[in-house]
Length: 475
Figure (spheres, rainbow, N blue to C red):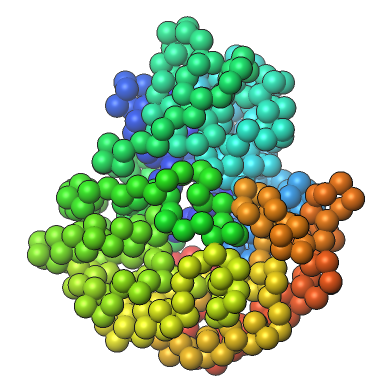
């Protein structure tokens, strides 16, 4: 069948998307015709071409919350991007007609679900017989999504890992077989959804990037994946619900992919898109040893968890293997808040990790969250103190307000965190999704904004730190 997979904004534009690339590769190996459209990045480039600063700013992570609720999307996103959306709707319609597309797939994240559903309504009106499938981390079986399914606007949903389920689905459609008993797929007639077991990471194919131009992205780097899932269960994070258990590829397979793609594209910079690259310390050590011994002169980086298992010698091996930077989910400098988050890390481990990375020449990037439920002024001042203690080791920081993401423990069990609720038990939002408050009113959006500003001022004391949020300029 002729399949087109689409990614709409808002999502990361540092490098080509991995999700639709993996799914597309699986379908091509099953002899289906596949095209991949990264309209997320294409729209950003178009906004840049038009010199539309307000539109460009919506790809900045500081405005991520604007995409989170229907209300904020309608008031802060759609009015700004209305013309771009219309332009790309027409472009997609023309593409479907020209290439006789039979199946249209949308990769759905929490930040693009409203624009994705808007596009689906418009496309289905033009092509009622077109089969539409929804996948990705936010293609969950919510009432909002199921309403589209039962209305005939969506023909199937793949709410979890889709590499194998999508092939079974398209094969069934092509042969005219029912789809309602396919593991990992929800159709209109599905009586009982059957989850598909998490796939063996060593079965992941080596993907290529024939559908993308690296020069059009914000970094000239090759995205790659060594693991799926996370070893932690942080209360603010929605990652575990999608990927399931943590899995890691064998180091030899990762090395082989890096060698092949470095040679094919002439790019030696890799970014691991995993939740964390150090979830399996032994495998990471084996991979680093292979990279060092092969003397390939490759560079890599990725997200990492603060760990007392990453001592100086371990980090030295990573540096020798080509590790250029690590992005640590620090979140807070208060041990009490870290414990509330269930981070299972210690501030002293973080200090040692950052210090050792700095001394070895590995850039330290950290993420910080302001205003986790239960954070007091004392806790916040402990974060200020901690940041000052590690300031000289940092290269980049990203500071964001605490937001309540569906699927997280904080969102699902707000009463545990003393978050103010409506009479029906739902979370009370003063206006937008980032405007939740605690019952005592001592943790509200105004307080969080002031604390974030104060923390950014402290970070700015070191002029060598690249302090996000800021607008990313085009190269």
